[in-house]
Image 1 (cartoon, rainbow, N blue to C red):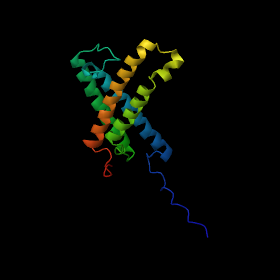
Image 2 (image 1 turned 30 degrees about the vertical axis):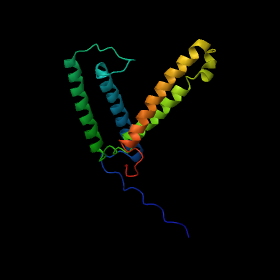
Image 3 (image 1 turned 90 degrees about the vertical axis):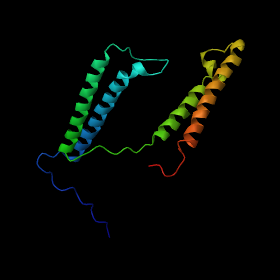
Image 4 (image 1 turned 60 degrees about the vertical axis):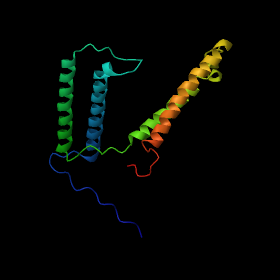
Length: 163
């Protein structure tokens, strides 16, 4: 005996987009929000401690505040647009500690790839530079290991009761 067909969604209500169109609407709203987050990140880059800044702050704090107000209004409109289709953003699912641990793993890989044996593809590392390079990499690795321990011990990244 065959299984019953799954119930199809009720017929389209007036003004309602189909499921594929709704999915596209949601994904596009998420993309717009990501672009807005990138703008916010750039607006706050002047206060970053990064030794490799990407943006030149060519606007005043007042102009930055005005842009942030516009972003807030635009985000509110994104939510109203979704609500029009009886939709809402998904709840967050990824713990920040997972992001931190994943990125620290990539940092460890990047540090490892700076070892002399891996840098041979760029030319042999001079003998008189190997010890200092290894020392610098050891310090970087120790700092990353310390961060990982902190995340595990203090932030409880390995607890099972995470969302």
